[in-house]
Length: 366
Ligand code: F6R
Ligand code: MG
Ligand code: MG
Image (spheres, protein in one colour):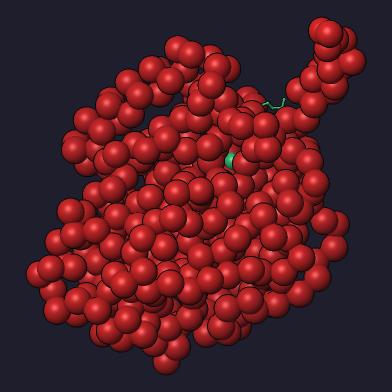
């Protein structure tokens, strides 16, 4: 049997600013799914990371399925209705279009999904990040799938010797999907040359070159490309199948110990280190720092186990301390230089007005 894992996330309102969704909102989403799931999805989990709610579900209907996407879309609307009633901040924020039109891509919510023939044992990881954008996964995916310094399986496990195929999307191209396929290790430097620019080039998927099977699916939505204005950062999700011909769970997690600097943080307009957090964590310091959670599952005939919280371990407490230090360090320089994003990536347009007023006051000395 072929199983599809579909993850869809949206920010439809949160308590006290952009901290976390309310219990009632989460219940509304869960209840809607429970009441309308029959005959459609096999299993599901609802969780949150910062102000974003994620629906993770399994079914047999393949990717981009209209009915599955509609179910999630309507569940988020239920949540948004509760958010309005409770006066939550940013109620319905990511539901950018009023009408559902076939699938949720281009409507605001982020989607990561893949269809595959289940292995006899099928472990996978579900990542959800807040206060950052999809390019945040570029570095950990590069290191986890291409670099034997992080992925020892590339030299120890014959199932990985052939390497992986990366599909990378140019997210600035808005008319349609513009993608390139590149093979590691032969085209490693080409992969690196693109992934170094995470605001433009984003890993969309990764496949094993040994088995041809898909290992990774990343949500590549850019909200400001859909809305044409600030509506929050894109807060990406990602599914990674692990073990066997894929990297081990720990090899995928290892690069997150870097706490690498990503775009996002306050007003989606700053640079901050990505902190690996426990599931259902909130947002705090300077509307951040950018966070990523990871729920590990196994799936069998579409049924999900309970999750194991991959970043809930004493090791990651130490990493969180180190990442806090990095966050404070870059915050010390406020808006100067690299601490604030370049003009093209600022999520708030106010500065454009300010600069154009000042422009008229410039004089050219003769
Ligand atoms: C970032 C984010 C927050 C808001 C900030 C101001 O993704 O959501 O940092 O940008 O709290 O919010 P507004 O402009 O809605 O008052
Ligand atoms: Mg928000
Ligand atoms: Mg968010």
